[in-house]
Amino acid sequence: MAQFDDRLDRIVARSEELQAMLAEGLSGNDFSQASREYAELEPVVARVSALRAAEQAEQDASQMLEDPEMRELAQAELDGLRAQIPDLRHAIRLAMLPRDEADERSAILEIRPAAGGDEAGLFAAELFGAYQRYADQRGWRFEILEYDQSELGGLREGIASITGRGVFARLKYESGVHRVQRVPATESQGRIHTSTVTVAVLPEAEEVDVQVNEGDLRIDVYRASGAGGQHVNKTESAVRITHLPTNIVVTMQEEKSQHKNRAKAMKILRARLYERSRAAAHESRAADRRAQVGTGDRSERIRTYNFPQGRVTDHRIGLTLYKIDRVMAGDLDEFVDALTQEEQAALLAADES
Image (cartoon, rainbow, N blue to C red; front, side, top):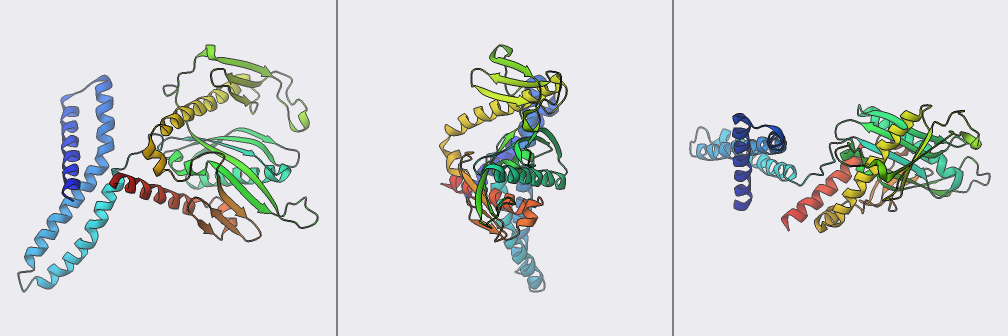
């Protein structure tokens, strides 16, 4: 406990030091770094102030117990404070946990059918819609970058940019393999089929995050094609960008303008390169691997949607919800909150070990 309190004192002292430095008038990069650090410490310091006030109130109430006329009132106040103080300490521990620098960012969502043919494509389209409804519910902007639809109305590939504060923090747990079990509309024998869809959620990258050299790119242009492969545009508006050092390929044909398709493709390429560098950094940090909820690997089966039973199960935390209709309508918060709490608990355990 004393070690924890000493740590809090150091945080408060550092916050006061930064406040004085900013008041004196820093400039340039020094100002930016000090401002960022001060902003990160501010919510922790506010919680420390609340804790110190509660602890002082506890001492005052304890002294009041000696007064017979005030004893009953003091005891009631003391009971409330003693219940409140552990919660305040826990909130501070959570606020002090190492933060993923990408958590506050917007995100790129990529969905593709995996195993299961047409049924996988149909479920991919439904899942894409579920995320769009979730974004709408949270007031985020959902912009479709690529939507390649099959003849049956399924999805061959769907990519969207989801813009808002903290999008990546809420959606990052969705990366992985989503499995669906149901009777397809095309199934005449009434048999349940199992299909899979892959979801990738990448933090959106700015140009300053990833340096992309023009010399590292091969850019091909061609005519956009629609369902069945027929050309839907007489001009070469579709764009394929290959990043030669990593062999990452991004294609874009959603817009009629080659310039717009190139801009969208570059946005996706930056996000994939940024995520690649983040993954490499995570691999070098053993503590991060211990604290992760699941592996974060796109090949990991994370969730099963069983339509006949009306249930959705998240395999990483063993949570099953019997409300598949609501989940497909975009009601994802119960899963996201549970996954967030699981990761926080793992980080706390790693921090205390």
